[in-house]
Image (cartoon, rainbow, N blue to C red; front, side):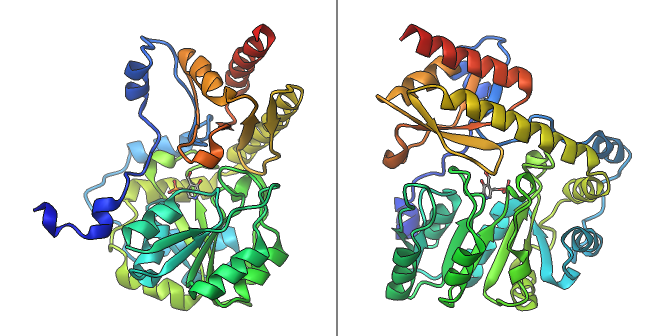
Length: 361
Ligand SMILES: Cc1ncc(COP(=O)(O)O)c(C=O)c1O
């Protein structure tokens, strides 16, 4: 059987997802200690309670609407775009996968502005595409000249730009995006963290047919576990997605949760404000430590650079206390940790562990 597996799949390394609480608990011998997850940019406040109320009275025996008519109507109102420019999926992740399914071709090249969200290079590789890194500059902005050169040199059809970028937290500005769109390549701006900064390039959709925007309900709406995201793009792109997507790709619970979220977003907006305030406070705490350089972020996490290979030590100190942050297997980010913003009491705990370590060392 193994010799039937496509070459590029055989060589593919597994994606590194966040580990479950149970796995972390046994791996770090945590007993019944509380686990604080600051490693997946999840929303510590969770979803609004109206979702639970709605779901508890709902019967799930029917398939969802494959045309997503009601959901798209709500998304249209939220985004200001016509429904025909919108399609939803099982997380932004599914949207990325469908884009590769339509436009990706074995042996084609994906230019990837790293460090960035690992799913772009992972899914490109799973298609048999080649990934070429166009490293970001020291301030984590995209190296425009190099990226445009590489796109032209390799006749690259797709370029993903996360804005705010994961794990660096910076946004791409409109001029950069326009420059990239003018190459003619399909530019996918991934706005998964949009609600934390309210910066979008959706105003460019009317002028550029090659622009695709992705959004998610995972982070701001606190429903990562239900898996729902959406795409905004030209009618042509959307109709291609409808051609190939699984008919019932958004499950009914996720659809109801997304609509309920859009009907009741006030509480979530309040929580976003609390998270952003907490982020500012954490940034100023980190800035005072000489061994850590935090990077300004427009999302719900902060990337930190550590001196003296401290990142591994700090990671382990935190893990021992049940606090998990994101470390990286990418060699270029060896001395970095990405820390999601939690509730004030969780941030108090993480600050205490970090402070204690640096006071002692
Ligand atoms: C930039 C970016 N895009 C997409 C995703 C995946 O989002 P979703 O949960 O909607 O699939 C993530 C998740 O961490 C992300 O950081």
